[in-house]
Image 1 (tube, rainbow, N blue to C red):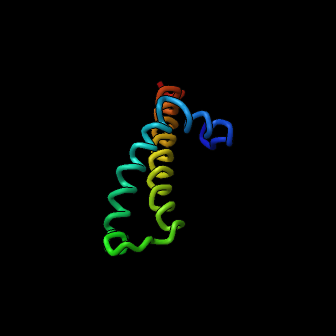
Image 2: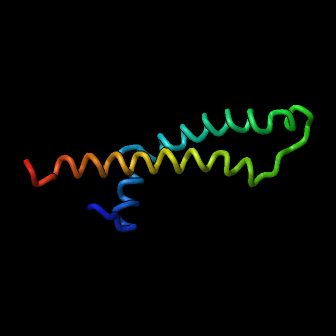
Image 3: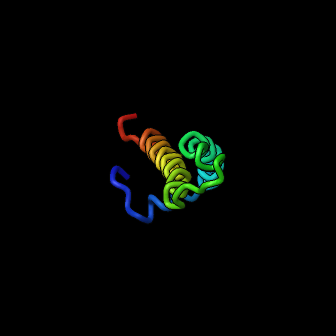
Length: 84
């Protein structure tokens, strides 16, 4: 399991509540970042480009998912190491 296949990655990314945790993180962090980065436009009644706002939410979702996958992989490797 040193190099993950797509199937293994998807298994790790979609189990143990990872999607829910990533979604909650994306909503909180995305909202904070959108406010920081585009708050002035929003307060003036203008709208920032939709792609920028979407990416502002998408990136924290991906980072949370990636971190969870790496953590699960690390735990698996530690639990199944042959040196014990």
